[in-house]
Amino acid sequence: MLMESVRIPCYKFMLFAVLAFMLGVTALMNTADATETDTDSSDRRSYEPAAMSDTGLNYVALGDSITAGYGIETGYVTRYAAYIESDSGRPVAVANLGRNGWTSTDLLRALRESPGFQDAVRNADLVTWKIGTNDLREARLKYKFGTCGGKYNQRCLRTATQKFKANWNAITQEVMDLRSGRETALRTATIYYPYVRADKVNDSWKKDGGLKDFQVLSPYYHAVNRHVSATAADMVIPCAGVYAAFNGASGEEDPKAKEYLLPDWVHPNETGHEVIAGLLRDTGYAPPQTQTPAS
Image 1 (tube, one colour):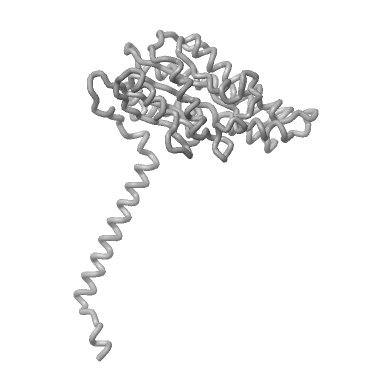
Image 2 (cartoon, one colour; image 1 turned 90 degrees about the vertical axis):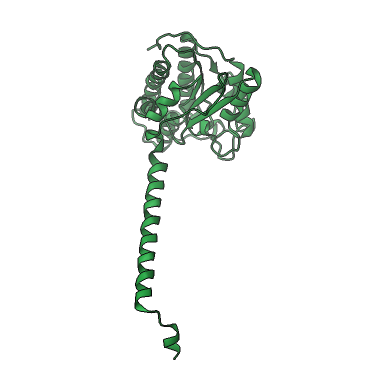
């Protein structure tokens, strides 16, 4: 009798099975759609600026995880937008296109191939780009592991520096071409050296006469930042001096000691982001003249 009281009629069992199958397929399709959107949406979507009044401004921020605001609540992009609103009295719509882990090569590819990035820049009244931290980060790790190449284990550092310079020129030209004939405020920034404390202590390559890692790596940070500053000046694009603010005029100051970094010793904390936003604010908002990047 007990078995009969819980027996499910065959037709009901079949109905339950069909419903379960359909729900499972639907869930699988939704998961696949979400995964595809998450991994590739930036390359396919078209950026539509927020509906604004005629006096509103569209601000597009390009960069890596620092631009994206990794690890903090309010990054420099949001802070800078707030400064623009307070200084100009005009509402600002923000498109933060910072991407975690990106190098200058990734950003250049997006500007050349992604309709979403291209539309965003075309519709912008103000564009900032801050890139390069990961270019040198990858080369630094190879140096530390002894896989950088060359007699003094610095080949990859030289290659990364030269590639960054070429990419930075190309990025700048792509932004200017996308905004050709339109008044747009363009702003860029140097990059800081986050690993000063550790690199002043460590001696990863034992075949260079006892040089600390900082003595080897610091000149490459100087080189990329000199290029950014000099090229931006040639093109009349204001440049926020993040390198000097975080590392001092000599490049030897530790941003962690200044309490500008998160516990990961790489990304800025809230204070660091406020410093970057303030430096961008200090550059003003006037559009640049149109010139060709230096080679």
